[in-house]
Length: 276
Image 1 (cartoon, one colour):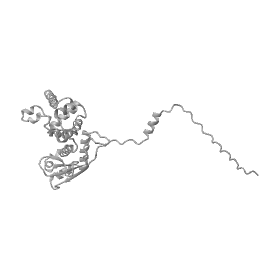
Image 2 (cartoon, one colour; image 1 turned 90 degrees about the vertical axis):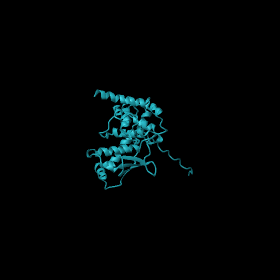
Image 3 (cartoon, helix red, strand yellow; image 1 turned 180 degrees about the vertical axis):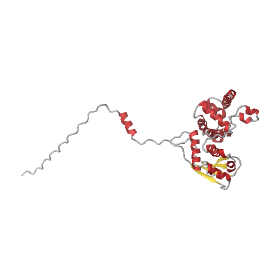
Image 4 (cartoon, one colour; image 1 turned 30 degrees about the vertical axis):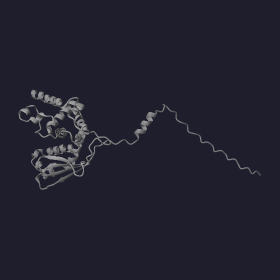
């Protein structure tokens, strides 16, 4: 009897399936594109969404009921933010080029004037818009909704615009705010483009580019048309860093000093006045 261990039989190989014949060479770029197409797309950049608040200091004031009747606060404030940001900025993934405003509180209170905007005592990333109830109370009934929204948009600009570290002329700051309001179609009927005739009427300030508010706003509107869409956005972006030096600032943006631009703006409107 043999004591040798039996030799195991080999496992038979399974026949391999025939490979289908390739009809065209493999394209590695096409494969890469196919892999990319199946991945989740990058989210579209969005604008910042600050916390929005409304505070009414005197509910018994007639201006309070006028505001609440003519303005849906949550919609009005978010719409004002969207109007301002879409006019002055293009969104990116980080939005680092946009001021880091984290909250805006609208405070309705009795005060002189129309409205003003300031940072809070906490820090400047929290803004307060102080809106006069006395002013709201005297708005003509047929203009209430548009005027309230127009003021909110103007003041909201001050929550988001750059100011060259505090060195930008106040007239340009206010002009940018009224330009955004003008572009949003919220300009009141009494706004008019200035002409040199204003100088003869004793309104010497009308013949200055930095007179501010709608006078400068209409000038910026002309710049946008003359030098292309995004011109005012570029002005605001250039106010982000450094200090404002008038000649260098305007020449760098438009190849011409601001006085030359202002003269051409006036010449444009004077020619139109002569033909009407």
